[in-house]
Length: 436
Ligand SMILES: *Cc1c(COP(=O)(O)O)cnc(C)c1O
Image 1 (cartoon, protein in one colour):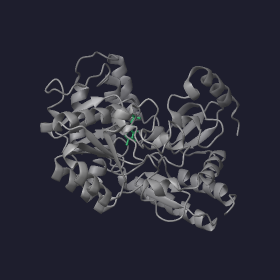
Image 2 (cartoon, rainbow, N blue to C red):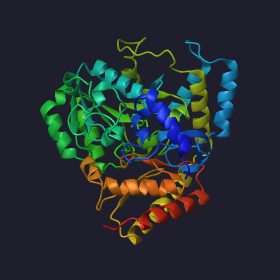
Image 3 (cartoon, rainbow, N blue to C red):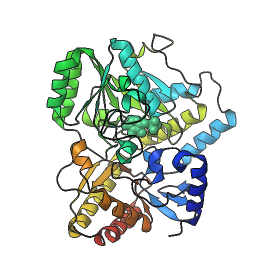
C-alpha cells in the first residue's frame, strides 16, 4: 500500500505540531508505522492522502455512528452555515438540542452544552464539588474522562500507550500537581468490595464517583451487576453524586445510552462525541436541583465563547433526530454479533488466545486468554500480537484503532459487504501470525 504522501505530511507535521498530531493516539506510537493522513470520508470509508480507501473502525473515536457525511447532517450544517457562524448569544437550536437530550435521558432535567467531552467531565466535577461542599473524587483505574487535571490519574486511552507520563503512577501526566492528584481516589473497576472499603474510610469527604458505564478507553470492559449496584448504593448512602461519563456510550448503546441499556440512576451524565455529530460538542446535565448550582443560577462558574455553537448544534440535532426516527440499535447489534462471532472463529482456528469484548457497536479484541473484566486483565494483553493484527488489517484496507486499549466502532453505514471485507482481512491478518 502506498504511504508516501502520508509519510511526507507526517514529516512536515512533526516540524510544526508536537509529535505531528493534535491528539496522541493518532501518532501510531503504540503500533509503529506511518499514521495515515486522511483526505476525505464517505459512509463507512476513509480515503487517505495517497488515495487508499480504508474501511473505518475508528469513526472519529465514536461520533460517526451514522457513517461519514450523512446527508441529513451535512444538510443541517449547510443550512446553519448560511445563517451565521457564532453569535455569543442564545439561539433556538440550543433549545431544540436540549429537548432531544431530555427525550433520550429523562433524568436530565437541565443540561449545559460545552465544546468537548473533557469540558463536560471537568465541569461536572466542579459542580459536584460545589453542590456537596466536598473535595474528593473517585475514579476507576483505566477509565478515561478527558484530560482535566483531576482526571489524569491512572487514566486510560492514550495514557495506556505512552501518550502521557507514566501509566502506573499517580498522576498519569506530567504537569498535574500532586496536590490535585491527591484529591482523586482511584478504585478498581468491577470491584464492589474495594469501592466499599474506600467509602468506609473516606466516604464523608467524597463529592462524586465518575465512571465509564461501559469502559471503552481501556478497550471494551463490561460492568458487572454487583459493581453497578454498589456504585448506586454507596454514593446514595454517603451523599456523593454518581456521574455517568457517557461521552462515548451516549446515543451509541441505546437512544438513552448506558443509562437506558443498564437501567442506571446517576445524578449527572456527561455527553459528547455523537452529541455533536462530528463537530465539537459536549454536555453535562442531571437533576434540576443539582444543575441549578451552575452560573448564572448558582455559584459554580462555567462558561464558553463557542458553547452552543450554531453549526455544532445543527449537526447534533440532525444526528439525534436521525437516530431517534429510525433507531439503528438492533441493526448495529446484529452487525456486531456477526463480527464478534466471525472474529472469534478466526482466532480459534488460528490457535491464538484472545478475548473479544463487545457491547452493541463497541468492540475490542484483547490478545489474551480468559475474561477481561478489569484494567489489570486488559493490560496483560499481548500488545505485540495486537500490533501484528492492526498492521495486518491495515494492509488489507481495514482501519482499526491503532491501540490495544481503545474500542473499535462501527456505524449504520457498515453492511454485509463491510462485514465480509473485515472478516476476510482478519483471516489474512491472523492466520499468518505465529500461534505462540
Ligand atoms: C472521549 C471521551 C472523553 C473526552 O472527550 P473529548 O471530546 O475528547 O474531550 C471523556 N470521557 C469519555 C468516556 C470519552 O470516551
